[in-house]
Amino acid sequence: MIRIVSIDKGQYVMGGADDFDRDGILWVDVIDPTDEEKVRVERALKVELFTEQESEEIESSSKYAESEEEIGINLDFLRTENGNYINEPVSFILRERFLITQREREYKTFSDTYQKLRLLKPVDGYDLFLTLLETRIDLDADLIEHITDQISSISRGLVTEKELDRDLLLKITKLQESTISIRENIVEKQRMLSALLKSKFFPKDNYETIRMMLKDVGSLLDHTSFNFERLEFLQNTFLGLADIEQNRIIKIFTVVTVVFMPPTLIASMYGMNFRFMPELGQKWGYPFAILLMLLSSIGTLLFFRRKNWL
Image (tube, rainbow, N blue to C red; front, side, top):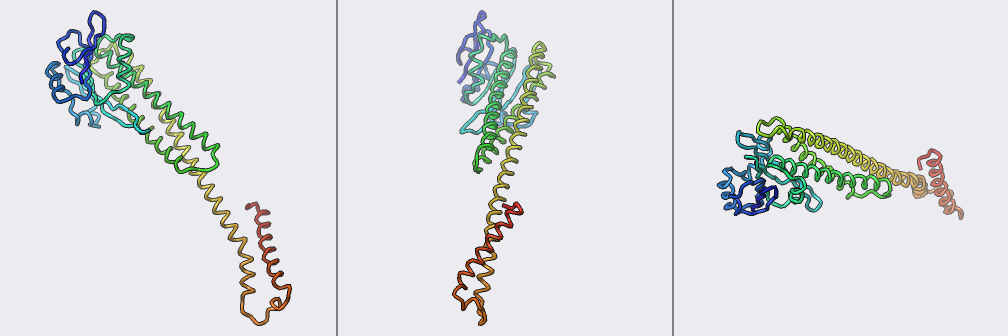
């Protein structure tokens, strides 16, 4: 699908694939295009769109490329699916003061930008690109805030829950992976913004906006670092509490084993096959043995309590 946004007498006009001949084209948004649509865009605008392999390259040199005629940028956009954060490539081409975006699906970043066009009134593709990027950074901040809320919930749960659950540790690990994904995504934007400041092609009038966005990105990185430290602390706390619980259980088994050792010794002594054992011939022999076992167990328990081992 192809969407075209043009400026006509100060008004933003939405169009489709049949509006390439319109003057004042500001934005060509290519969404999950067919091969025919790709060829049509390339012929109409005299550009070469990114291939799927080029969009997914992870090298820094493949993320940002600049020539005398255009700037090509590949960024990863995060989306959530079943609670997981997934990176998907989105490509941008800045050329002759208009912007070409290439993506495989709808994103909230783009739908929000469409809604803000008449409010923000970008005059060219550079303004529009920064608007898209600023909107994406705001959404990244929302993702970080959501993870922060989840971390706070887990922290409260560790204090109030009496039993430790294996699922809680898995949830902490999952949040660590999500935080890493968000951090990598933000670092990528930071490198791209730094590259724009060194660009000979990008208008210098936008440099102050880029610097402000760099500060915002830097604060998000600080927040992700703080979240990761909190998750490590929660993970260590969970493992520490698990060790304490395990030691408590081992202590109980140890105490039970030791308490039954003296009675076992007494029973073993009276189970020996010697002819001369006076207690065996007495009526009080059996009660005496039972009483001796009970006293030995109680004495062991009192000894443990006196030593504060219980």
